[in-house]
Length: 548
Image 1 (cartoon, helix red, strand yellow):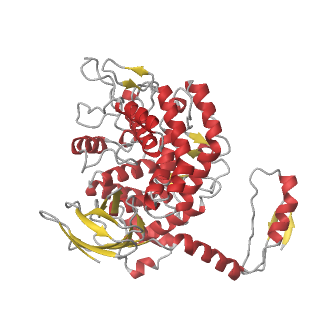
Image 2 (image 1 turned 30 degrees about the horizontal axis):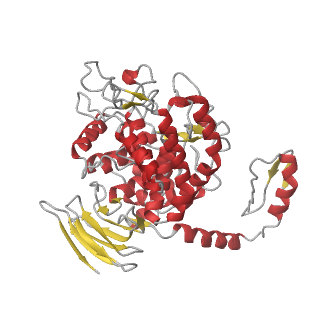
Image 3 (image 1 turned 90 degrees about the vertical axis):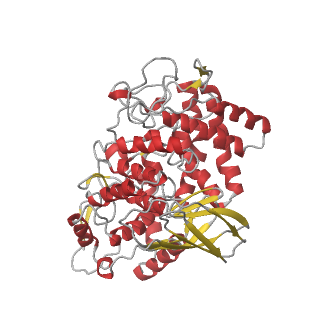
């Protein structure tokens, strides 16, 4: 080996152990000596270092697995060969590739989550001039990357978001005060993680007027609290931010329409515009849903009865959603019904599906509880185009399709993700088809898409195999978490339509459980005792049997 200027040339060796250490925010000159000492203190023992790594990651990573019955010969293929085989049949995802992407996606999400949540490229630039400055982007990308964080049990990702929320609240208060003249917090769509101040202002993408960002950041924290039953986390890490957000809405929702409903203005549906014209608008469906969710969640979390009543009353004054002339859930609920004014025109060919926020990540619109709105949301989803083919658009639509129980559509979108050349041999992904523009959305978000097809839940209800497409005829999922505070320890299904699950609850409770969209049955779950339930895909009424 030898040095050559600022580089190092290595020759004549069979293996190279490269140790690196990064100090965030430190000046190179001041930190160099300390960093060198820290690296030199690490034993040059690859086997020992790997064993330490395996021990740490086994504990964090090994509880959840997905087996789709892939052929052993395909599981043994190197990544390049597996991707080539997938490219030869782009319309049908390979089980072996899905299994590997499920594992690698969870691993990459875990690896990219620490001091901060994942950026657009995860933790890895992939380019000296990273697209979109490699920002943490909250208007879709971060939420999609975290789609499986709770269900597939990657708590490090959720805790990284919680830490960012804790640290950035002072900056977010400045945004709310300076941009909107309110108390509380306003979260920017883009951040470097080191500052929470709004720094992106533009007429074409006026994210400074977007008010749903804070709620989307808090959704995975609330889901984690529900799935874990961690009341201390809810009280100490989530409730303070929810209280700040509710205060923002108390001040921001100060205008009313002719029906006595509050009006959200300015309002922005990222990154769309009514009829493709001016992006700033009124009553974006996403903003309405975020405000309603934030106010009702804050009311449920507070111990102050007066506050809770005031926030619920304000939520009740939010405008209803609107169904457009084509039968789809409208992206903007303006003007109010009965005014005679023409509605804001839709723009269906767009990469974002922000107006389906009440479907996913929320559970406000569901097939079981709000069938009419669910039908309108599904119509809107089917009308949506792919625009520029961004990976996040396919991910978002697949998650919404699963929630809306359109398994064939979910399967086609899954095939688009795996068959369009989004993945590199490293199992990292790109933003556009054909491995164009390094971006972590598909890699980190795909486990969430697969999990959503297999398990959906709200407190008190678990739906197993709710949207299984034909490309997943049989399989086994282990260790999935639910919002009912129940672990799906084991879930198996086969092509004949038979399914079986083992459920474990840390507390005694009764939960409604259903398979294959069949009617749910109440199942008693004694504390910490595995309960086996069985279901059959119904041609008519569904079946569910339980024993423990």
